[in-house]
Image 1: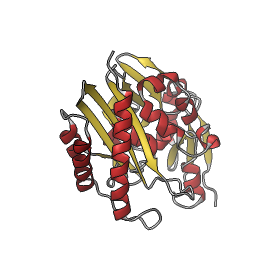
Image 2 (image 1 turned 135 degrees about the horizontal axis):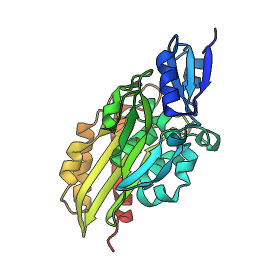
Image 3 (image 1 turned 45 degrees about the vertical axis):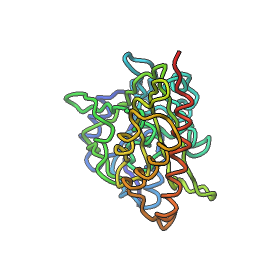
Length: 292
């Protein structure tokens, strides 16, 4: 059985959308293909009629400062993000997350847009973007709009994007201020299973010894990429001290759904790991924040 019938290398956004919309059967976007092709080969995705490759569309390969923020094209390989001085300065959590996905060959091919569009609740790039308050730019044949990242997800492996009507263009991130810091950490099985036992992204802003603002994303913390908003509310406005972190740990494991996974870890182990990750990631982000 053929896994697909037709392959189209799009040269523009309109070309890609038109091809998706007029395909005689099911059609899917492909960029790096490191998730989709494997799913097709292993039977986790039904065969499709058309693959529409977006890797050569110029707008999807931009990584630049677009005040008041940063734009990262959906078709940019992960390795380019990892090596970017812009990302290092303004989005360390994302740089660290992209640097942990797969090996060098995968990172030279896989794209950030693909990592997000696959809609897994523990996708490293997604968790980092969520902590960094990224917006997702989406286009159809009639208009373009920027939506909150969390609006992209319906459930495990289920994206809100219509596969033949909409295209993920890229991501908008705020520029980091002098008092901002971010970090990403994860725990993996030694065997190298692709999905983390648990990962975490943290962004914070400090005012002297106070956490004036904070965002914490956890994967998997539920059926969709998860923001630990109760933990954030507790930490916001508090001093950065061990007592506060200890209390935040308890709040985190009470609000996140840390279930047992037959292939990865028990819920008890994940609750233990969540505490370790929160302390490490929060303190690293704090150390990276500074005031001139």
